[in-house]
Amino acid sequence: MRTALISDIHGNREALEACLEHAERAGVDAYVFLGDFVGYGADPVFVLDTAMRYVADGAVAVLGNHDAAAAGARADMNDDAAAAIAWTRTVLSDAHRDFLARLPLVVEKGTIQYVHADPADPAGWGYVTDLYSASRALVATRAHVTFCGHTHVPSLFHMSVTGKFASFDPVDRVEIPLTQRRRWLAVIGSVGQPRDRNPAACYAILDDATDVLTYVRVPYDIDSAARKIIEAGLPVGLAYRLYEGY
Image (cartoon, rainbow, N blue to C red; front, side, top):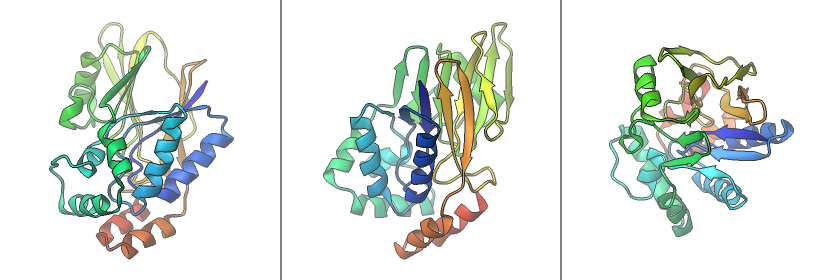
């Protein structure tokens, strides 16, 4: 089975559609959504309608901090993020809010764990950004592989059987064997708002039969996504940063 790992869509219809189309062409037959369906972008309704349809067909989905805020939870966010959430709340239906409110923080499937933020404290919405935070997260879980999002920057960490930690930056479309002798923490980059200076949408594919993980960058129609942000009256910086990948 080939599983698409999709995170931090943030209301970006164009980026989501591009990644789903690529995943279909790549022969993906299962989907995992690692949270933050909404926030920043101008198409939260389309994104949630799509996610709800995939979940109804068996996809896994977990809660992100922007999702929780859109569903009514209090959140500590910068001004642009808060403005986007306030607008998002006005366009969501009760069905959308109910879907978000019911999402779990963590899902475990066999030896794999899915979570949006720091696995060491999923409800604290912490970030896994370096070897220190990754080592703390790896110690906190016994899963062979943990997949998370939240940082908008693709990265990969692992721990050896002797307790040594290491990291490296994934390269687009280069296969990475997730060997059984190590435990892994894969931070999936953002579909809808990359922040690693590469504006292309990012998602990953896991081949369950071979335990091979591949990060994929997918170009999409940034002009349309940015224009809709501005037309919706959202902060213009949210549109401009899509071009910069930051």
